[in-house]
Image 1 (cartoon, one colour):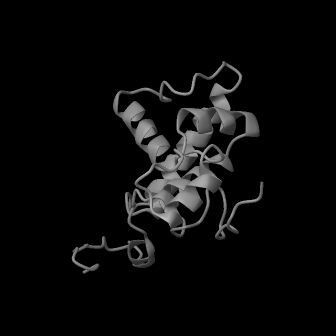
Image 2 (tube, helix red, strand yellow):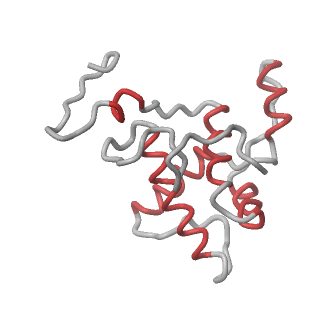
Image 3 (tube, rainbow, N blue to C red):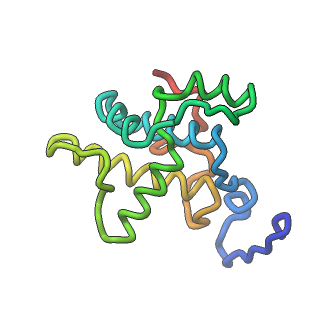
Length: 153
């Protein structure tokens, strides 16, 4: 039992990926963390295109002071990783390799496709969306260790 949830393990399935996985929240910190992770997988030019297509919005009048401060730092500087993940999964559901946004030229598409694929795998292995991952939850794509946060620029 995991909190209020029950989980069954297959005979050879490891316990650690199940109990160490995090639940995917849609709070601002998660949006930023996922966006930062995605941006480590692409060039600065491609990251800029995704930041524009999936922006972290500035604070609105209803935001509390802490959220307003955090948004003032993140807005326009990082991709909204939750929005990107949702768009990428929606594209996959319609048998599209990439979402329509951002518009990518032929040279950028292969790198973006590889990054999106790796990003989806990482999100699903880390955030309780897939228990079939072979690497430890929280491990960044292509690595065997946890990332230093924030990621190097």
